[in-house]
Each structure stands twice: as C-alpha cells, then as structure tokens.
Image 1 (cartoon, rainbow, N blue to C red):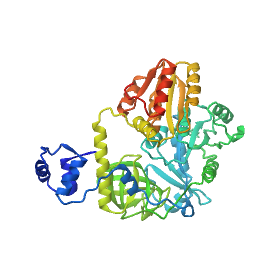
Image 2: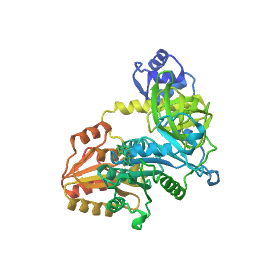
Image 3: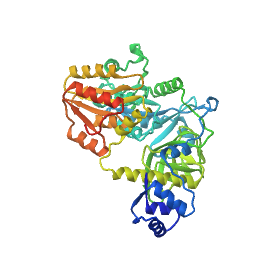
Length: 478
Ligand code: GDP
C-alpha cells in the first residue's frame, strides 16, 4: 500500500510542501508525485497531529454494507429480467412490445424515456423490471464488474430460424451466471414458424422445456402482433415466485449502475437499479469510484420521484463524476465517508491501470483459492478434437478435492474466441487452449483485459497446472 505525497497532503488538507518538509526531517527526499509507503505515511500523519486511518477494500465493504436483513424484513420485489438471443430474433422488438403493453403507461401519460431499464405493470398489478440493453455483452460486462442484478434471462429464439450461434452463447452466459432461463419463441405469427423445432433443438443445449418434460418455461410469442406477451409476463412472475425474489425496502439503498453518461446542462447522470432498500432525494452515495448527493430522481417516464425502492430503475442526478455501467451503488452516512471511499477507489483504479498487463481476475481467483476463500476454479477449455476435450473434462472433474472444485464453464472444440474471453473475464476463469490457439481478436482482447490464456499440447501438463492452481501454487510465469 502506497500513497503519493500529493494525495497524503490532500487527505490531511495540508500543503504538499509542508508534507515534503516533514519527510525531509525524517531524512527522506520526496517529490510531490512520489509514492511513500503506508508506514512512512502514518509517521507523517502523526507529525501533523492528525489521526491516521488506513482504508482498505474490506473497510469500504464494511462501510457500504448495512446490517444483514432478517427474513421477516424481506418483501417481494419485481423480478429483474435481461433479454438475450441471436441477432434479429426480435429482442428489441420484444422489449418495445412489452413496454407498450404496460397498463400503467396510459395512466401516467408521461413520455417514455430510454434510461437503460424500465418497469412494466401487468393487469394483476404485479411489476417486472426489464434491462433494455439486450444481448449478452451488456449482461456479461455488468457481471464482470460485479453487478449480478438479473434474476431471470428471457432467451428469445425466432420460430422461423431456430437455435443460432448467439443463442448458444446466451445460454452459456445465463448458465455461467446461474440465472434461470425462460424461452420466448418469437415470430410465431410467421407462416413458417416452427416452435416445436425450437424446443427440440434446445435439448441439445441442455434446455429441457416443460413440453419436453423438463422444467424450463417456454412461451410462444410475437412481438409484432403482441400475441403471447401476457403469457410471457405470467411465466416471468411465476419463475420469480419460485425464486422468491425479495428485498428489504426499509434500509439504506444499494444497487448497481445500469447506464451512466455526461449530459450538457445536467452533468453526470446515472441510471441506478436499486436492489435493496430505498433511495431518496438528498441521500449521499458512492457509485463505483464516484460519489454524490441525490439532487433529483427521475423514473423511466422522465417524471420526478422522491424515492425508489427495490427493483426500481431511476435516473440519479447529483453525481460528482461519471461512473461506469456495472458499478456498485450504495448510500453512505456522510459526505466525508463518501469522499473517502471514492478517493480510495480512484487510487486503486490508478494503481491498477499503472500495472501494465496486470493479470486481473484470474490472479485474484488463484489467490482467493490459496487463501481458502474460493471454492471453485472456473475454467474455459478449447481443444482441437472432441476426444481430448472429454479426456480433459473427466480428469479435471476427478481432480476436484473437498475444498476446491474445477468448474468447466465452457468446453468446446475450436479456436479460442472473443466470446470465450468475455465469459472468462466475467467469471474470473482460466482460459486453456489444448492444441488450439486464440483468434487474433481474442488474443488482443485478453491482453487488454490482462487475462491470461494458457496453451498446452500435452494433457498431463495441463492437468498438472490445474492441480497446482487448485493448491494455490500455480507459478505465474509458466
Ligand atoms: P434483435 O436484433 O434481436 O433486437 O431483433 P429486432 O427486434 O431488431 O428484430 C429483427 C427483425 O425481426 C425486425 O425486422 C423486426 O421487425 C422483426 N420481428 C421482430 N419480432 C417479430 C415478430 O414477432 N414477428 C415478425 N414477423 N417479425 C418480427
């Protein structure tokens, strides 16, 4: 842990020159941009007569976390849904159609706004929240940043086209996130629609719908004619009931940033999806490495509201900077606390970007395993032939011990693709290539993300590496 002279001075509200002088008295020559270690910093702080407080990620977690909710405080909330599926299968059309079907839309009469998420009210009065950035990239990106806000994935499959490449990817991403899937068989208005073919094809991807004696709900819909939309909403609400989606509305708000931008005249604006508690005008909050005080809240119709409870998306005005989609959001007690957390995080971000090519999530995962905090080692494996994939799979499954299990997020034949990298990044997984290479785009992406791809041509070497990883002893430069 280190801090620059400038930052230390800022935090103490002292002049940097005075800090440099104080360091000189200790026999240290330092410039304003130079980093000093935390022990030295503490001495300086004491010299100025301030009380020192080291902030660590765990302190931040503690400050952001309220008390555990007791079960009786939990109230049902609207489920949060992400729509995924192959391009042109009708994700956007379906999201539009669902929004138009909202019974509350007529009542309020407000102009609908695109804020990244919206909520619909069904005739029974129940509500459903939809994230309106369809597709698995946004979903995975959010998850990679730690925001697991989606309760249910609606997988859109066009009845005239069937399962396509991105359908399979969407299934994989939903499964990796542990999100239940509801299948919306779309374009059922078309003469060549074949919903049964879709159901059959899904079997190959381990999605067994009810009609095939499984437990995955599937609904035939048409975004064009609005046919089946009510059934789809019913299915979502049924699934939500099974999942028991609940939250305590009576606490400090927590949530995730769904969208954020700079706007002329409005400053930084973020759409926040509240996951717990209630967000109020006037609340002081942290959003990722930014903080602010809620100046105004606007709902998905652009109307001002005073507060927003669980599962409600709202636009928040009053940010000091622009956070990033997927950043966590939390209300804190005081402005000084908010500043402290935001500054700490900004420093961490700077340090991270300074370490060129740092191995991010995988390294963290491995150290978490070593520290006994993680129970799973997620991996993505690509091989040249099916035979070797199966051999590796079987051996890896046997390798899992009581404490740690290898979890194969995705195993397939073929080159390592960009989608493999996205998936690995979101789950902090190791990417293993056996007799295959990464396509150039995937290699570039892995490099940018600081994610390592390991290549092998001998099975036992791969197995030995995983064994080492499981015991937290993987040498980083293999
Ligand atoms: P996305 O890429 O998955 O978001 O798909 P879009 O919503 O953009 O739809 C792709 C095309 O399919 C558009 O031309 C839509 O008009 C059409 N489409 C979407 N849903 C339906 C449907 O239910 N029936 C018919 N006939 N066409 C649809």
